[in-house]
Length: 329
Length: 271
Image (cartoon, rainbow over all chains, first blue to last red; front, side, top):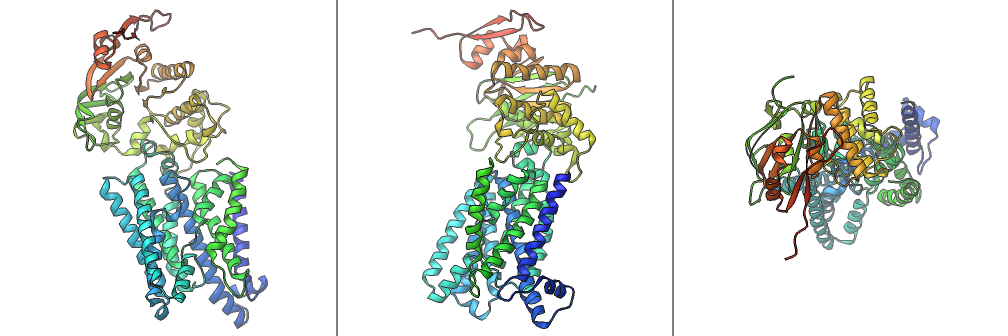
């Protein structure tokens, strides 16, 4: 138990450090003392504008989206009993991308930039509906293999739609569509934070409450059933709530890869597979990872911004490989 | 002890979708509390399906599958899991998991979603680990165990549920003689000393005949014979069901099971 407390504290310290870094570092550096001052209600107008209007909402979006993606990844891996599962495995990203790319290509983005996340969300919801309808129609219960295949097929279809849309795009929209698909937190406002939080906080709590059932489902559906789990109910909650979490995360910041795949594995390698620890730890670790990745994306080529999805892959993959070499998966 | 049987089937039938013939057809049986019952029969005779129906994993197509007098499919799953421990045929462990973590999952039906493990839970896990001779292996990862150890860990998880009834689907498949005997001995001890009811599916007719008090022989979804070992393990019956010539001889002993009928399949004559 004390080992658990130590680890939780370590994670909390890392989280606080990442948050301070994300708010303090950027094109204009803000000293830690000033950051704390602003958060306490003081500081001059410039510092307040940078911290409160730009960096803090962006950091909160990173926390909610990064945490949500990592958590969903952990849930999908358990439900599908597949270490390769990741948040986009059920085609959510494809649907969201179709919505966003259509918005960009057809010029909606130029008149109303705030419509893009809503179009992405609509696309993601359409993808979820489609995948679940297909999986439900084939069998009475939610068959994991059918669901996985439905996700892959629907994702492939949406990919084709995206490519079709892009062939009609002019150079400028092409560029912004591709950038959207690589993920970015640059559009984060307090509005984004509120929209994310409204869904993500209850969803996270609901998924945490399924931890014991997920421990059993990760071994097998029959085993879970015989150990007292209402299997179909847990599967439905897990797939739906996690898919919707991915949908809102993608709507807020585009398709950010690798967090949902790598973070749960990294946590598992260090702390084991008990979902009562794995789920909360994955959420916090995913938050930390996206906070740091976004800070890097903003600062490395400053004043230009790199796509954050590129950073998560460039940094995440070597990190993961080194973890993989040191432990037996 | 009540006279309600642990498991009961009444004109029980079940068919898989798109199947030509029912997997289970008009089965009637009753398995008394405290008995050691073995279900035998050729591959595809419906043994696993029968078990799934008796455990309420599927609703019957017609007839009734009852556990302790009520419809097995209608039982609250957690309530059922506090009474019946199940060892399924296969389980694929994809993510790292220690032996103790696996056994401790047997406490979930007693804990629900939120309650933390207490002293009684730790004691039940310890006892199950000791009973299955897994002491010293608790911290080992499941995927580093041998087949025999892995199977004992899964039985330990069922025992940690502290159930009155144990159901095992081919628990000794792919185990060597010593590991197979160890599992039969363990089950026999649980029945004799703790009054546990055991229902197992097995392909080992000879060990079933020496350990079980009640046999059910399935053939293409029908009960070909059931009752005492002597009534079921009878040459003509077994030959017909398995479609293979064989001898039935009494077990030479020594031991309490001396005289139990033992099957020796014959080689087919050259034609």
